[in-house]
Amino acid sequence: MRRVDYPGFREFNSKYGDKVWKYIEMKDYEEAILSTWRLFRIEAKKFLNASDDHEKGFNVRLIDNLAEDMKFEKNRTGSLHKLRKLRNKLDKGGHVPASDDWRLVENAIEVLNLILTTNRPELVDGALVCPDCGAAWEDYDQCDWCGWTGDIETAQVYESTEPSAQDEMSADEINHEGRLNCFECGEKWNEEFTVCDWCGWPHTDED
Image (cartoon, one colour):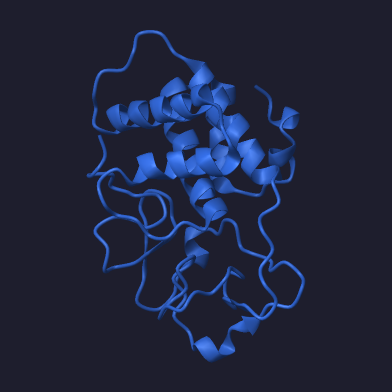
């Protein structure tokens, strides 16, 4: 696998993406599994504009919903579930297979490439967009993408052009009043939740 062979990654500015390719190039299988899953989790949720889901099995549903949306074949979906299960084992210090199955990483990279090269649905004219991250603003007290809690009256009205979203920001740039940063992925942590609403850390409800 080479980064240049995947168009979606060529201009993808992401510290998580850089970590993925770093460990792939180092042939560090365990770290490649962990970092690839983290990147997949974040980008799949953003692609689907998925609502916050903290019930048991939320990552299972994320994969299944993405598979349905993108019309994946069963073997592709199954490989993503194998990646999820192996990541769980690694996180919990469980047994790791003696032989490395890099096909799990390769399949996830192919899926990420599809996500990064697929145009997202356009917003309807007149929709509000978050002034902080540019994502669609739902009727909540805070942006359900980035957690911004400023005055909703400053939210911009979407007019025909796609909003420019901040895909990845460094932890130092993510410091909104009353919010913490996730130790796992660096995204904004909603203090009312028991797990990160971006990556699911600490993954206590997965099997």
